[in-house]
Length: 243
Length: 306
Image 1 (cartoon, one colour):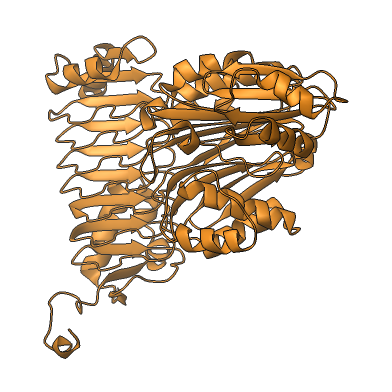
Image 2 (cartoon, helix red, strand yellow):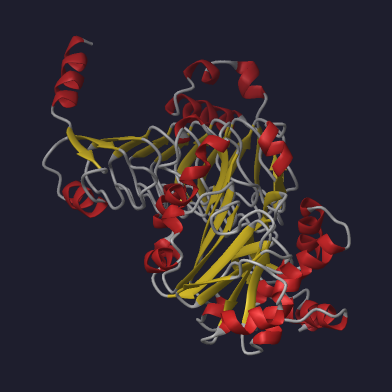
């Protein structure tokens, strides 16, 4: 433990600070694309777009405030924390690493993400996890309408409620919702919760920072699983006479 | 893509700063619509004194002041101000009378707004240049709206810039596009409405104006609009009485609302709100799909709509 603490302190001491009130996003991102430090702090983002997009190294980035569109987009390997809210498309097309939003996220959070973990501690808006391709998303609050549309792979955990149109035309992504669900989208159905699903749910909650809940059987028991009814996978000849 | 900002001041102590706050907000939406812009300002008594009307027009000819004066020989204090392509005519009379007199005096003009507490400006060009033409930074008042346009549905000209102001004090700005506006336009024309442009948004403004004239409040008029219009929209609609935001069911056009004890603000993007005084204490949220959010001025002034 002592070694870890020392390492963290050392990292924190060496953090490079970018104040976006003084520096533009291009300068920040060109440093982050060829990083000379292990740890970064970004101040005064004030809703700027594309903050820390396209990072592909194992660095820690702490953003002190609210960001605009596409923050942490295409992330690979980096661990990015947003101490505020995020605009549309946070962590869109993430490949690996992790992104944590301490407040709310706007629409299309984690869109098309292939890997890594996106944690939203507040609420996520519409189209969360649209066309998800393998990443994991854990939302501690609610998610908006039309979430997980055509989600192909990966897992979405929602500790609050999901609005209408959940999982429309979903493929093989797995969705866990603890609260209420509005209308399910086309071909999205509730599925049985097996031991393996409970285990992966607990692991995702733990990774998202909800360790106590992950160990609480009653809490886990409140979740229901949703996924594909697999009736839209292929064109069938049944309706061929209609065309 | 288009950009919208709106600011409704609850605290009268901020009214002197309306224009400077709006100018800062405007910078956050320039990239969303660099081809043209427009603003509506409510409660600037230097522009529209009490008991006066303001009529904004495009294509005002030289000598418009004399021509309008000839139409209204009994009316005092007629003033004409050029602000880029917009010309604002004010006089100590009511808005309908002044608008009719302006159209009679100079049939080539196009009236783009009329009010007894509000004034509208529109133009083509970079939004910051237009803000200078409109003297936005020095505006005072209790409410303001601005729009930056990236044209899709009709030509880039001052007629196609937002806001669309149909009827006294109404201003409507739109990010999105309507798909069934031609049918609705024909219905409104059948009922007697006349149109100034080929723009889809103008149809929405005339629709809302007709509903308000029929006795709806702003919220009811926007609920009716959402039922009747197909397409994509985030709308900000303001009147002498209030401020309302509506989004379609798909909600792909962005919108953020911030509510603070001293003000209510709406913008396409958070970066337009980031510099408002007290933003970090404000309740910042995204309006939900298919919902109408409305504030009445009296609620705002008394803080009843918390």
